[in-house]
Image 1 (cartoon, one colour):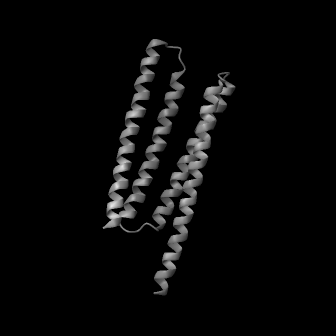
Image 2: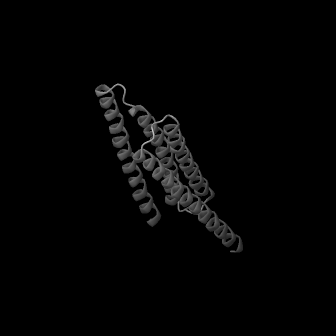
Image 3: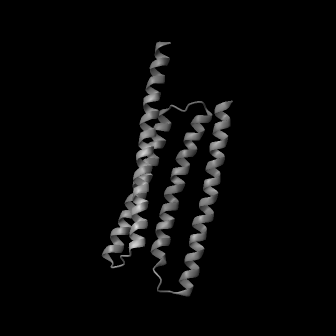
Length: 156
């Protein structure tokens, strides 16, 4: 029963984050359309593209987290499914960091270097590195716990 309650709370949090993402990324898109009408030469569309790119990756992470929550609800927290889900989340984090690195290099090469934008992209890359590290650490911890659980089941 306790596992199902935790599962419901985590899934509720996932739905809340997904809803907040729709509001945020939808707001960014509407703002970009407005800014484009005000100044057609504004390079805001490159930022909108990366917002959508980030949104797709974030929803991929939420989907994988939903899978983890489902396994928790089944009282199967230490499973190979969760190991794979955490690893997939890490790979999505790598894709996010790589995308922001590409954006940073593109802006520098195109002559659009500005310190605030550079620092923003650099911070996002560092955040991606932290996220990837945490996901891979969780993946390895769950794998170790799965192996211990399997050994204990064999000895009983």
